[in-house]
Length: 138
Ligand code: AMP
Ligand code: ZN
Image 1 (spheres, helix red, strand yellow):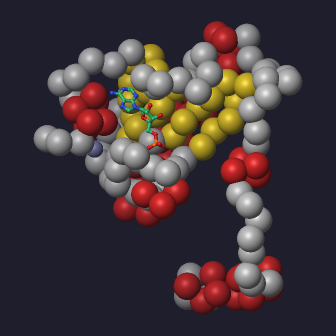
Image 2 (cartoon, rainbow, N blue to C red):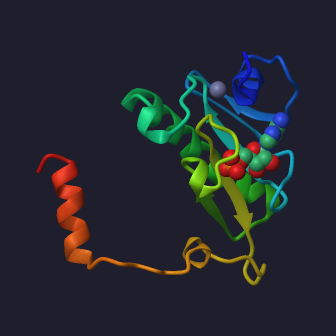
């Protein structure tokens, strides 16, 4: 098994695990962006979100919902940023789906999801919506 997150799920390599349930395992990020930075992975390997079954995706997000309050309170944080890098071009470095929960404090100096984008759009919102509806078969 070469996937590092599958190996953590299987207990083959150590991790600071904070929660595990039937669908997902949560552990502390080895290079935390802030204190309390947690990574939650589905037990079933999927490289990208679009490869997940609906059941695995639901189980993963249930675990996110279960953890976010306790993580925030444990760290005395005001908020959290919850994110997924989905695909290599987005910055995903480990091709096993994972959700980051990063605690946030008022005035902590970190940006928002919006600040990672240079906003170089080429299409109108209406054109884009039509393309996506077509891809969805609508
Ligand atoms: P991403 O860039 O979204 O693919 O994030 C992968 C995350 O996994 C990074 O924040 C890494 O610090 C973290 N990471 C990599 N290896 C380990 C590990 N063995 N245990 C815990 N976290 C890890
Ligand atoms: Zn895996």
